[in-house]
Length: 299
Image (cartoon, rainbow, N blue to C red):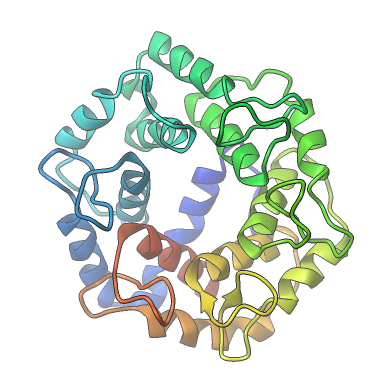
């Protein structure tokens, strides 16, 4: 069972650390794959092989989940080279905060953390939420969660945190799901999962409809769909759905075996995970979601 913390980063890491129980000897192959994604610049590679802060989040957390050490001096220097994030977009600002927290909160000096938080605040919306694009009038579920996580990773209080929940709840639809944007008529599994986790941390209890909606996104062949009627399940939706269902204390165990089969079908002997059945590439992001899913499926 998930226990409430002030960091969804640590919450997911706690679960992902159970993945080796399922991986067995293959955990070494996963660790080797992750270590190969570390670029000479110090960041973990994106799908084009370039170092990227966003992918570095997943690389660091996956190695931590596997309890593997890596030569991270170059990674610390890479993260510190961004200073307080001048020139970064919202996602990469939040990634900078999360990378620093994974490396130890002393990686960024206090004045740098304050400056980084100020840059994140520039994405605050009038309704009290956050959006990845500047100048928006309403927050997005994804933006709300990333901003809240960044403040947690920086160990700084979020200004007017109570307004965040008000923004988030405007995105809930009558069927219990959450849309990412106010004008979207349909919820998605990753967005709903993000809202569930944020509501949990903010102390708001959602109705059973949300868990019921997530359960309906389970695919007959295993895994979860991103949206109702999607042609294929995917690993992001599967990992986040399982994480949200556990947070909601919804009984999802009937889905354990097909979900295990689905996640196993996406693993590659090179050590990484594909995002879905039609995905030919491997990367650290989906490998991280593979570890999170297997952590939930380990018991």
